[in-house]
Image 1 (cartoon, helix red, strand yellow):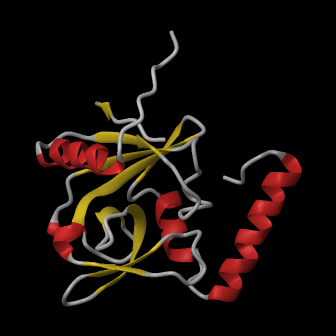
Image 2 (image 1 turned 180 degrees about the horizontal axis):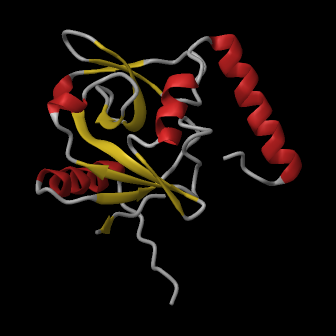
Amino acid sequence: MKEKTKIVRNDIFFDEIADRIAAGEKVIIKAKGESMRPFIRNGCDKIILEKLESEDLKKGNIVLVRLSDGRFVVHRIEKVEKEGLVLRGDGNLATLEVCRFQDVVAQATAVVHNGKMITKGSIRWKWQGWLWPSGVFLRRLLLGLDRRWSRKTGIELETLTAEKR
């Protein structure tokens, strides 16, 4: 049986996500956007979100935040500062976002890619966070190669519905 799709405003959708996370539930959302490419793929990967503990606020972890302009993003922590976090999507060349600690809604604890679960703390998860370049030149080069490879072969190198687990 085919799943029904219902379109809801992002603020309503993510308020529901925040409520479920606060209640201790795991929430699964379908990835939307290219900002975490190549680790998280638009439209096909799923992101498992859970409650964030203060010890999880460290460089390399992936979090869902509400930015000051009202947008929600799932991005990697680039830097922890005294007053908040600096974030960047793996697919972003130079764009950084800043948020306060209280703007963090959840942490990503796993990504489901091609039916396989990549869990936080696994070798692949750590590799992606540690080895993915922060410099613009290398990042641009690798993202370009990834996009070219995907277009040429139709194969990926490596929207939103909430599901209760």
